[in-house]
Length: 283
Image (cartoon, rainbow, N blue to C red; front, side, top):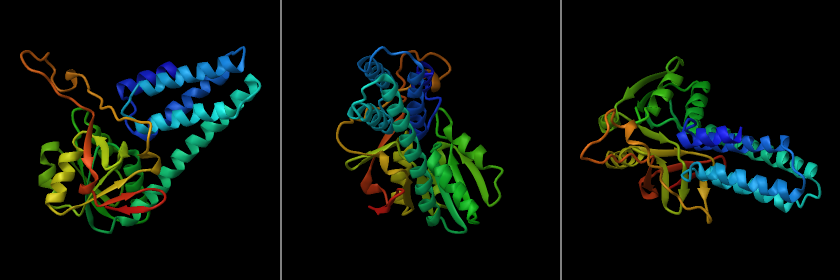
């Protein structure tokens, strides 16, 4: 299960940073089924497998922070038997997963309150927290129009559009990335998630920066919805992911290079609001 999860993270089969963190945490439970002859051996195995999960994508900050917490919690518990170490691991993983999922839900609740009846929104990518926010707004009876950018080259926006296409109360329009500025003229709010926020920089799916910059130019409010676990302090250095040229061109590039980064860096000065489970922060 751990090797499979590593491959999925490497290939970005699971897109949302919070979902990646949950899958990686749950993957470590596979170790409770493996034999270990001592506590030290079990902890070394835990550290090795956690390291493999973290290395699978160094852009995912919640993956790093949750894995570090799990490994450190098992070590700090100072178990005296392998059975005790496994029990601690199970308990910590359960706590981490519960906190990730509950914080996402609470952030979505707060975010949904900002959406007003008749709003025209634009979102980019396939953030699970943004999707939860939009679904909660619909459950509250709020009606709105939604533009969803394709989010090339992996067309992640199509997933969001399909997930909301059959819901009452929302009219969904899929927009080519290059037409985001055109769609923004009609919008009241941009709603996006984030991979992480470090100092005064927000990191999110590639294509976020030009949308946010254009929104600022057109005086359209930019709202980020995410759990507070994505506010990163010391210990983590963001490393962008550069994807294969085959995602951009079907034919091998000859005589030119292909730049295909996974994430954008957005100055927080361009944001208006960041919504977490704890608060609504204004910038």
